[in-house]
Image (cartoon, rainbow over all chains, first blue to last red; front, side, top):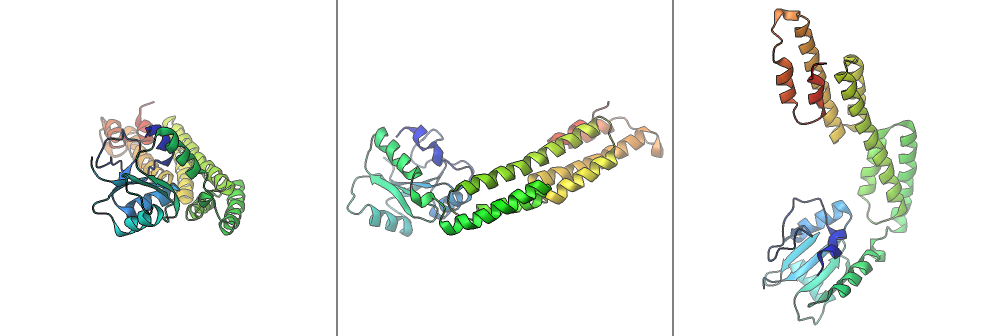
Length: 56
Length: 214
């Protein structure tokens, strides 16, 4: 996945947190909790990008 | 906002969303693009190349689910009207309120942009006013008048960052007044270092500059 493709979905509402399984180069701020992700998405009028998987 | 969901220990709601929208999918990762209220906008399972993902994201951005409903647009139009009138009057407090009311409504629409422009005008006024007060005081201007202006900023912006900045300014100007008094010989105190100490106390922000000796 090219990081630049999902930049429009980046939110600024939360303190930066990386993906728990890989380094995405800071493309997105990641949460591991649905409620936190929902709150951040709502406050900034953005979408939630869900990656449902496991560590490789 | 990214949500990294652990497929081996998923939250119940996330699992439900995935199983109902990607039924039969077996190849990880599963990907979903959702609205904040968990409406399905798009998704896929397994590896996809960049052009697929790019198209999926473009489709998501164009989804009608992101658009404001007619009911919301009607409310937004009311807020636009209120915000525009408030801008004309310089009633920035009401502009900010319209902005907050709009933030509480979901969906994208042209009215949201109009309210955003009104809020920007309010913020620009706040910044401009604070900067001009700091410049005037630094140049030896009327401190009483400066405080009057800052109190107006405080009244308009309250607990917003501009209001907090105005509060700092009010304190800084009072302190400068005391320093000037000492420098003029009031109280028989030694003024040495008073400005430097005050400047250090206000190091972060615009008010440090008013303690510079002219």
